[in-house]
Figure (cartoon, protein in one colour):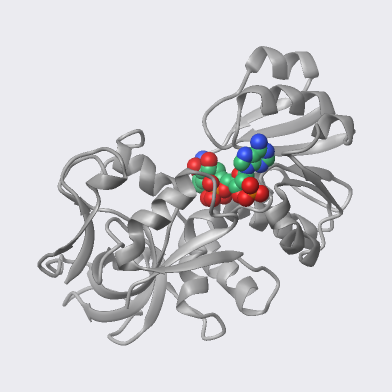
Length: 305
Ligand SMILES: NC(=O)c1ccc[n+]([C@@H]2O[C@H](COP(=O)([O-])OP(=O)(O)OC[C@H]3O[C@@H](n4cnc5c(N)ncnc54)[C@H](OP(=O)(O)O)[C@@H]3O)[C@@H](O)[C@H]2O)c1
């Protein structure tokens, strides 16, 4: 089978499409034929070894985590509702490949109402957005500022917050304005031209992944008692105390029940994961580079099979 592999950590040129053996089916696993795989910032972070959790810390390695596909085989003796031929999606290690072995406990059934590309766009950004909205207790009365609201995580946070009835203010570059108007965010601010803190105030929740100056300026727009959620492990605690707001370092936890709920919302049209580009597996380097350079302006998905 074909797989996007690295034999050393590093830049884009370390990634090669190789012919490798189909993974061995481990106990309690299913072998899934990958139809589509979502590209996330963690994929190039893994490639560069700047993110190296267990499972993605040794070379040679097949890249990729988010996937949607069709079950080829389920390991004998696995207690599972899943059967050969079922359409599933979720997260696993090594999904930029034609086949992947996935623990059956991590599989989620793909609703018939969404295609494989849409399903593959959901796991990491969708779960992150879902759990952020829960952490922030987003509700009708709240004003929510979403930085990077045109990106995969930000666009889903914005849609889920709108669904809860919040007033949503989005920062984005112009390329995402049309999408943001379509999902009916209340205000859009062009982060490339102008300063959001001159246009926004009295915010209950800020979601940001940029830290540094963006975080510093975000503290100025929050109400006392508000919450700032950072996605990249950076909170200026003294600044948060001074602004009398709660700083939250957010980490997504993989949860198949949350993912099934999200998929149902995608299937009934409540949320759109904002796929901006579909590439082939052979174009994986381009997909990773587009994301790393801030050029994906939405979700990049690889169509594998
Ligand atoms: N902690 C966790 O558990 C967790 C989980 C998932 C993701 N993350 C992190 O969360 C972040 C977002 O993920 P993603 O998949 O949506 O990433 P992405 O595809 O890289 O999108 C990021 C978005 O940020 C926007 N942006 C760039 N500079 C900006 C600025 N100065 N002000 C406002 N927006 C700006 C871009 O908007 P335009 O397209 O409009 O230019 C882009 O769409 C990433 O850093 C990722 O690593 C963390």
